Length: 390
Image (cartoon, rainbow, N blue to C red):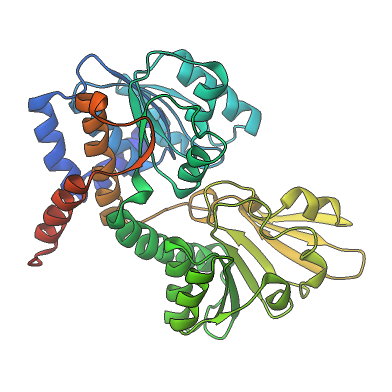
């Protein structure tokens, strides 16, 4: 095993030891072999916690063909997985074009099941008409939106949307994303949170978690939310609520968490105070209109691998974190969500994929939520692992 793969092995070993729900599932799958004879094509952030999920699926007889998401692949993890007989495409330095070619390579391997993130593989199927796929899962809210909008009626097999699960919403999105985004902001910028003015764009499960963790550490937090009910919830939770145009000049830091493109666009940049920090934690790197931002500046300076300074002709400057990509996985020293939350989230993945593998014919085509009995089964197991009673 080469040095890079050995580094990945050591990192994965620690994480595997703390993901107890998946450990039990690996033992169960090794007996039931729900994926025997099936190839799973995957597009998901390739980092150590994901590696434990892949090992769990492999224990159930699956053949894995995978690529990461753009900008978040960790090369030591890829190197280790390749030593385990898995076909893995991609590297951390891949361009967006490289990433699209990696997706095409996964589909060219003719998987029967898809494990998707952002509906990239599903979009490829819709465009190419790939055959032989019996079903799949989708990890993100962003992907669920794509499946129910631009891809509606174009995906002729069932896709279980993991982010529709209330378990994932609470355990991973609100608490784990909230914690990891705030931790990533502090680590990447080395700026203090107490007393700093933050605008969180989006008050879904992820955005609300970010807002609450910022406030818990002493940040002054305002929320931008286009949905009236979510905006009402934010107001009742005690946050200042307003339009981005109203809050732009007040903000010292803006963090996007919507899943939608260009929520901080060209019309907002002139309203921002000099030194404002722009960051994103949504799946796609499109929530901040980075192309317009760079085209409107007179000079850009890469201060380190995750911090970019953009100077305007009027003397102002803005700071962009991680190229507008998901800051807690694409930024410096990416850690992502907590081990326990991903143990929960990836158990949802594993059992949903098992349902697809064993009962795809009983599921309707298109995007759909995690079956209730799977949610409840995992909730009971999680409570037991926490030493809590139901």
